[in-house]
Image (cartoon, rainbow, N blue to C red; front, side, top):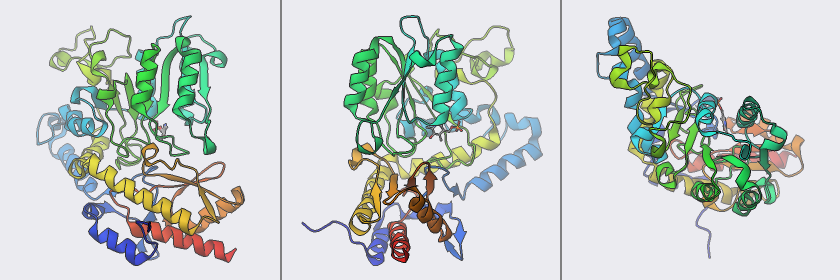
Length: 426
Ligand SMILES: *Cc1c(COP(=O)(O)O)cnc(C)c1O
């Protein structure tokens, strides 16, 4: 059987010309390097700027200049309701009901706010299950919550180690740890996509399993949102949190998001409250008693940062037009092409760390250079100098993320050709 791909630039360019999503690239500002567009493989870290962001920001600055406080009530997008203007698109991206999502704060803040409500430890059940290689914020947040409740992380933090080659975690390993410790686990807190290995988790299976053991389930979707199609409502996770500056292209430090399942919409669980989470119809009566608004909105603390929400609104509008299903379709093929190129052209130089099963990854390949860390670092630095932008994760991983909104098949060829030239120079 002949390969479905070819390694030449001409073939890659023919694929780009036939790509039904090709027009979206023009909606982004691509950084330049020596007079040409860079090959940007870092959309999993900081997505590129949509061209529509600057006018959207200008419009809000104009509104502030021209209307000042009246901007809260006037114009097409009154600030008072501004977070509602991103709600439907956000819900679509994560597969939720509109009332289940809210754009607010940043990921780390939302993780703490969610844990206030959904980590309710008791002496019999106070452990949290996380993965051993978790992102620092996740580890710091759960550890500090455990301490805050007066428990000892040494026993209350259960860290699941990768049991597969290259550090991926199998479903069997998750089953085993829950079979052994499930009755003392209060919260299962796992990523949608692991940031270092690029492994995508089966969120539906994890939720089913953890719920069967009586645990709450929360997901950190930093690397999953805008990358994989999600069905948070249907799978029934208790909560999820994410940031919006990675695949969602909403700018550095963008407003993050949270999902709270509908069954908790009117929960009496404790929460940290603020006036923006108060029932909207009576918020401005400014009463002393907090009455939470229905759904995820009830976890808001403050009136939202309009200048930071404007890019998210613009960016989600792009996702609406492109559609997650179409983005995933291209992502599967584009990432598959990059993997095929690496394995067929560079098998003597690189190895792919990310799971080979396309169902277990998104738009990211984590790659290791054969011969060790120093060689890996040397290749990474060489690529950056040539305008090929991935990122480096200690101790020895180069992450290359071909994203379907603005990456091309030709970018993948450029990566492979530059790596080949580097390897030939020794
Ligand atoms: C990017 C990322 C974060 C970042 O958290 P912020 O609060 O947005 O700074 C947290 N967790 C994971 C898993 C990430 O990938």
